[in-house]
Each structure stands twice: as C-alpha cells, then as structure tokens.
Image (tube, rainbow, N blue to C red; front, side, top):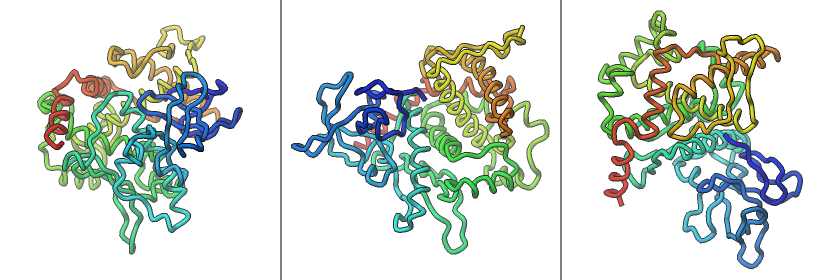
Amino acid sequence: MKLFSCPACEQVVFFSNVVCERCKHALGYEPDSNRMLALEPNRETGFWTAVGRGAAGEGWKYCDNYRYGVCNWLLPFESPETLSLASRFNLVIPDLSEPANVLLWQKMELAKQQLFYALLRLKLPLVTRNEHPEGLGFQFLSDLDGQKVMTGHDNGLVTIALAEADDAVREERRHAMGEPYRTLLGHFRHEIGHWYWDLLVRDGGALDECRAVFGDDRADYGQALQDHYAAGPKPDWQSEYVSSYAGAHPWEDFAETWAHYLHIVDTIEVGGAYGLAIHPRLDREGVLTTDLDFRVYDDATTIERIVEAWLALSGALNSFNRAMGHQDLYPFVLSPAVVAKLGFIHDLVHGRVGHGRQAVEEQRRLAA
C-alpha cells in the first residue's frame, strides 16, 4: 500500500486516518482516484467539501459506517449509495449492542478495506450478490450456544469468525493448528481467493491452465481435507507448496497462493512508498539486493522482478523481526514450483489467462 499525504498541508498520512494531525482537517479515502482527501464541512449542503491540493470544490459524504468508526471511505455527495464500495459487500455485521463487538468489527473492516485496496489496484472484478447469485458477500459471525463459527467460503459467501479479530484467540488457534502465520488480513485474502477461482478460473475459461499448475480440482474436497487433518502435511510439501495447508487440495493450493501473491505485492508497494533499496555489503552475488522503486501493480511488471524484490525484502524484514525478538515476518520459502504458481496468479489477475474479465462483465450485463 502506498503512502498518502494531506492535500491541505502535505503532511504524510495513512490509509485509515480520519484527521490530519498537523492541520486538523478531516480526511477520507476516495477509492476511484486512490487518494486521501482533506475535507471541510459544508453547512449549506450538509456534506463535505474537498480542500487543498487538487481539490475543485467537490462535494463528498462518508460511508454510513463512518459513524461507528469503521470506515473512512468517501462517496460523491450525489450518489444514491449510503455505503462505500468496501462496506457494500457486507451481509451480516456483528451485534453492535455488545460494545466489545465494535472494536472487533473495526479490525475486521480495516483488514477488508486493505484487501479491497489491492483488488481495486489490480482492477479485479467485484460483483455483489444483488448482481449475481454467486456474487461476493461477507458475514462476520460470533460463536453461539457453544457452536464455533468456521471461517470459510461458499459460492461467494465469505464467513469470517468474529473471534479471529481477537488477537489472543487468533494466536491461540495459530499455536493449536501449528501454523507459522495467521492474521485477519490473511483470512480475507485466502477466502476471497476461492471466490476468484470460481470467477476467473471456473467461469473464466482457465480450468485447463489452472489444473496444469495446481492439480485436478475434481479430487474429492471433503476427503482431501479429512486426509490432511488425519495424516498431517504431505511429505516434503515445501518443494511444491507455499504452506502445508496448500497441499490439502488444489483449491486450497490456489487460495493460499492467491493470498501470498497479495501479501507480496502489497508489501512491496509499501517498501517502494518508503523509497527502500536494499544493498547488503556482504551480498556479493546480489541475491539480497534490490531497489523497490517500481510499480508492482502494473501489468507490465514481471513476476520475476516481483519475486526477486520479495526475496530480498522479506529476508531483510525477517532479520529486523529477529533483532526485536519476534518471529519471522514471512516464515515461508518460495520454491521454484511455488514461484511458477505465483506466476500463474500474476498472469490471471492481469488478464493473460482465460477470459475472466469478459465473462464477469457479461454476467453483470445479464443480471442487470
């Protein structure tokens, strides 16, 4: 994710900020232009007016969820919508009569907004369930009567257990399941990978190409998961998969690889925004050397450049974490087989595999 600046005073601000700490202007994120706007209330209209650099007196309103402190995204004041693009896909939100749920929902929404930031940068299709029966929708559910909510995906419906927004609970589950990494944002990126498999692979004419890389998805999914949990990870899984869970079934391999692709490109953009260049003095072969001054989201950027930059950046970040006594930030190894899978995802999201974007637009046209 890139850095932003306050248009009113040029102070560096961040994606989730709602106030500039220097000039005290209200701030909001405008997704169509991928910019942060500085705002002043317009008492005549009841909306907000953009001010500062690049502003032309446009009128704006916040997402209706702004009142709960969970969304700083903006809509044009004349829009009939009351919810931002990021909030519009919510189907079930937590019970807000429980005060603790508001804090958990804030974490949920910030993770989802960061997910949507990347999807918009990649120009990926977004279809609601009003537009198509298998469109995307999110429900955030709490455990009820001793029944634990399972995070997962079902024909476009993404369920995220609200408990996953509790850091202590999530860490406990990470240890119990022997996972090296488990984050709320990771859940969002993984589960939406299943939806994009349906959209871009199954419906996008890319099944044969995908099966050639990830394996035959027609293998019994339920049985594959049972075998995975009963017998444990496949032997030598590190040579073929980005995580042990990816080896359970081709669908999980795709979703895990999809999530890691988003991890990688978003973090590289952060490095580029900070002007990072990594040149270790002892790296005489150049393996850990990189300059992150490139547009990682551009379709002209190759997967080779992305992976080369990531190997150097993740190595440096892991070293920083170790110096602070933390676990590795990225505790994974990208084998040649995994790099090839990341390359497939890269080509898929940029429209070089199948005809997914055209299929989606046709679906939306027919639904309308």
